[in-house]
Length: 316
Image (cartoon, rainbow, N blue to C red; front, side):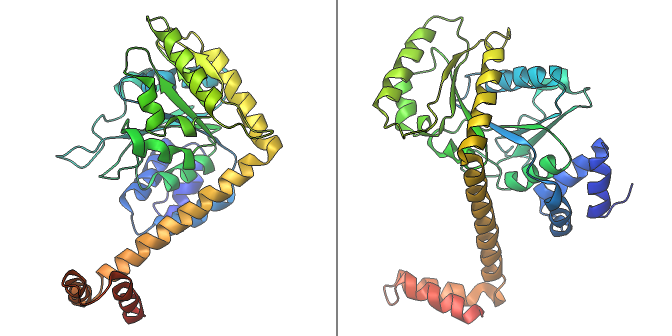
């Protein structure tokens, strides 16, 4: 097994789990070999279905993820799970490790589970998640589940990465109207009312239907279904997989899949470019020019737009 990125990609595509783990680490750590690795994986991307799972803490996202993995594996599909966890204040790594609640899949060679830390990123995702998804797509996984940190309003970022976004709710987890205010409901392709064997599940469904009825419906658009499930026992997971399949077909038939992926690629390129510009600005000699311009702005002697123009012109 080679150690250069191209060799790692070839080995990972042949099924070597260590090579895959090293590739994802290249991405997460922003290693020097990342550019070459991304060039190597690019021709193989575009085949995986990406399912995003989001919702408030405690609704059972990991349990639903595990149940989906089990269902897809029974159908013979290879499944990867990218679980984005809060950052440990001590190590800087993912606080919950590799998701102990999904370890019953750990010995299955057709399943790959990886935790990534948010490292202070507020969107519920790791800033390197898009590149990690490209790697998992390129090495041949059929389905990639992205489970995000439950961080409320900012978590809507998952919709920019996933083909299908599941918003998971549960009875007894607070007023569902608050979720609507947070904007999470707007990004759902499918609603999952988990822990549906508990009292209050029908009330959550009723509230969701009321809010969906008030939302403007586009002609020929997708109307998000509501699935009652109890992921711990597996109830409702078959229906959820069926709804995901129907959504995938709608995405392909309507052209929405290609549109979403184009937007995803634009956002990814833009984010990388902006990060590169920030690094170049930070590399200015002693950052003195930036400090000088900031001082002028703070004192009211220069406006921030003019300061930014000077910084850019000075860099070139």
